[in-house]
Amino acid sequence: MSTATDLQIAATERTPEIHLSASTGLFRMKGESYPEDVAAFYGQVVHAVEQLPTALAKPLEADISMIYINSSSIKAMFRIFEGFEAVRRAGQPVTVRWHYTDDDDIMQELGEDFKDRFPELSIEIKAN
Amino acid sequence: MDDSLFDLYDREKLLLAEGPAILERGIESEIRAFAERLFERFARVVRENEDLTRHSDRQEQRLVKLNQNLKTQTHELDIRKTELENLSKQLAKYLPPQIHEALFAGNHDTRIATRRKKLTVFFSDIKGFTQTSENLQPEALTEYLNEYFSEMTQIALAHGATIDKYMGDAMMVFFGDPETRGVREDARACVEMALSMLERLAELQQRWRNDGFENPFEIRIGINTGYCNVGNFGSDQRLSYTIIGGEVNLAQRLESNADVGGILMSYETWVHVQDLVDVEPRGAISMKGIARNVMTYGVTGRKKPHQQPSYALRHPAGISIELDTAVLDADTKVKLADQLSELADRLRAGH
Image (tube, rainbow over all chains, first blue to last red; front, side, top):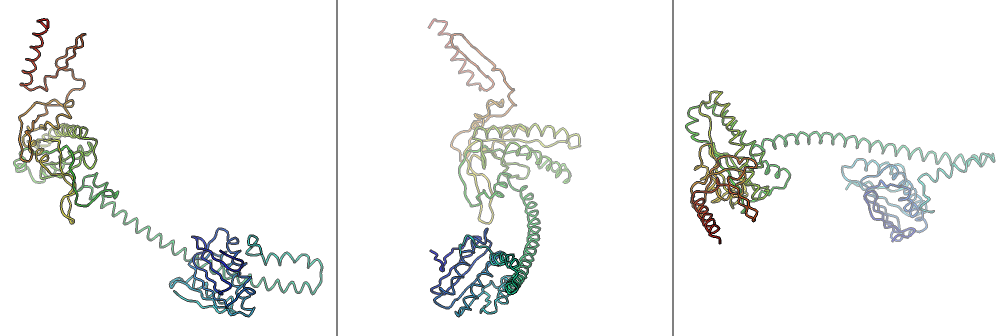
């Protein structure tokens, strides 16, 4: 069951699995993302991440492993990363691990783009 | 924040919504502060847009590549499909069409397995083929033989036969597997096929004679109906879909006993076709593996449609006799005449 800052969203064909716990400081996002209604799907996630600067009990560790992500979802992820940035600015350490499948250069380059866009965050790009 | 009101561009839209009032008020410091926020947000949106465009381009490139791969694969599949179709056409010449179709539809079981089934078995053979072949040039022999088999095969397939095999100048065909229309209809289809073959052969003989083929092929046909073992015989490496059993051998024996240009059938076949063909009874034959003596019938021709019985008697007292004397053998005729005579005597005597 999800609360304002805790999320347990199971993966579907079009949306990724998302897990967030303010008490453990863990964020996980995995799968494919091309929701029919991006705002409806990511609204809850952005809302929960925006609560983290005041709700987080431990340093934030985020693991992101995406196979496919459409442009609207990337726009929503910018908002999620802005939330991570806010956590960092609030004084909590933030570690982001961006996982990509070994031969998936698109996901690798997208990770690099996020790293360039959010220099304050520690983003590790990892091939699986 | 209400999740349902989330908008990907909500921050930009909120900022833009503030603009008209700030400009209306005209306070320089307020306008400056607003402009700074606007620039900052605008710069962020531009960067985001650059990232999104770049990502979108990469996705497009991947799609183009995938599409090219798909086209290549489709082309290769088309080539494979054509190859398979050609192979299938070639294989079709070596297999019974029903088996060929079932194999390619994935419905045919290729395990070594047989079952007993009542079939009607057909054998034909060219009379004196060895002698005939010695009198013909090999090229001519090949041409005539191919034409003969092509024509006979076409007729067999048109009647729904399963062509078991060609053995030199002989042909073995059966009805009832893998598809059956019932034992009676299978037997009738077989006899119809045999008649059509003889009729077509007569036409071919005429043409061959005109072509200089002095003593064209003549055939004998044997037909029997009975329980056979049908299915896949052989080994895991090489299978043959065929039939075996005493009833198959009987069909072959009937063929060898048939008149030249004639059909000899067993009693078991005759009972299913007696309204189709005129026959004359031949002797009984016995065969190893078949316990009974088999009555045989030589076909003398097709029965004419609506053929009148050779004797008909109807009486208002409720007596109706229709008698086809052609199907009675001499013994039966004598016995029947005796019985009728006895009946006549009793009637005359007032009993």
